[in-house]
Amino acid sequence: GAGVSQTPSNKVTEKGKYVELRCDPISGHTALYWYRQSLGQGPEFLIYFQGTGAADDSGLPNDRFFAVRPEGSVSTLKIQRTERGDSAVYLCASSLNRFGSYEQYFGPGTRLTVT
Amino acid sequence: KNQVEQSPQSLIILEGKNCTLQCNYTVSPFSNLRWYKQDTGRGPVSLTIMTFSENTKSNGRYTATLDADTKQSSLHITASQLSDSASYICVVSGSAGINRKLIWGLGTSLAVNP
Image (cartoon, rainbow over the protein chains, first blue to last red):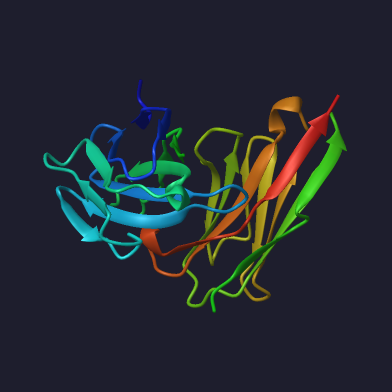
């Protein structure tokens, strides 16, 4: 497909475990964003990649959260020592991020439940 | 504090009817305003993006208006369909092209009933 894909669609894990969430952006999109969305809230910015580098990680809540994008395409959001408060839908978006072409395209999200 | 406020919080209409959703913002400086549609369990999908120089923009049955002076926007849905049932989110950017600085509203939950 031509859209942003995320896997898994649902993830249930126990408190204290480690999880990885994957995002496949639209081919050719240099910018990639991770958001977290809690029920009834708008998406909360976590981290932004331009190419392989994290251009802005100011939204990561603490050092248990980490994200990589080693080849400038697929990105993985990693959460260590998960807590119940980490339960949310994690959204990924990508964009061309050229002047006048910064429209974001969102994936379906990964619903993370920490028990 | 930069804010985006939407009204109503929720809305129920009958199929075929029109409706208008409102968005007021205090984000400054202002670069652009976006309306997204988010179906339950899905990621947001962009409907329109407007810069300060644009007063209205249409996308099929969706028409967005923007008054940058009063910092108000509306999204008008014409001849609603059952598939329009979703959350509609107003998003304002205070910096041109910098998506990580988007200010998100809480959305209006629209239910279209047969």
